Each structure stands twice: as structure tokens, then as C-alpha cells.
Length: 136
Image 1 (tube, rainbow, N blue to C red):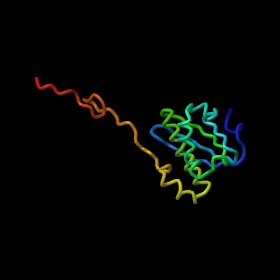
Image 2 (image 1 turned 180 degrees about the vertical axis):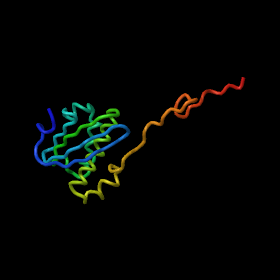
Image 3 (image 1 turned 180 degrees about the horizontal axis):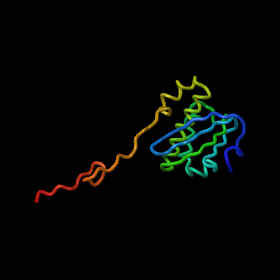
Image 4 (image 1 turned 120 degrees about the horizontal axis):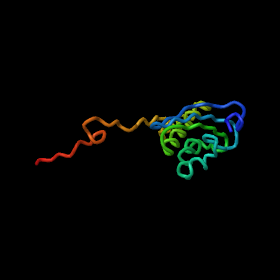
């Protein structure tokens, strides 16, 4: 199913990123349903811990049952995708109501966490790990 078949009406759009994961998030007026890549969020992410990660901005402002969320996530691992989705939801909430910024920003949900894996350099085993030194 595509997003158009699942939800209808106007929506609020935002992108969220974490490591190499990118989430495209749409917030619709609704009752709290979350669909990620065409699947229910619980089926897609599996654990309640990851569901809690992406629901954190909504729970913080007490709007869990106000919006339906449709998201497409790609790249990265499952945890990075959940955190990218959290970032996108937080940015979309600001599009809905700019007054929520004072509540969401101190929690760090609006900050793009740009830590990525450092590239391997030639002559080294890993990014920084040098070959073992032998005196004799």
C-alpha cells in the first residue's frame, strides 16, 4: 500500500536524519496510528524500546493520540532509522506549532546527530588502528 491509500487529507512534512538513515515523515490529523515503509511501526521496529525512541517527541508534548504518522525510512540500521524518525517527527511538530520549540529543543530531539563512521586510512588496519609495533 502507498501512503495515499493509507492516509488522506493535508499533512505536515519533515525530514529526519541519523548516521546514514533518512526518514521522510508526514503527520496527519488522526488517532495515533504509525506506518513505517508500509508496515505498522510495531511490526517494522519489533521492540518497544525503538517504538519509545520514535514516540518520545509526541509523548513529551502529550500529542500521541492527535496525529497519524506515515514515514518512509531508508539507509542505516534499525536503531538509526528509529532515531532518524524521531528527528523527523520532532521537526514536523515544530511545523505544526512553533510554540513547542521550548519543550522539544532542550531534550535534544531537534539536533541532527551527525556522528558517522570514520573512513579507513591506507597503511592502517582501521580508521586509527596502526599496525602492531615489534622492537625485534
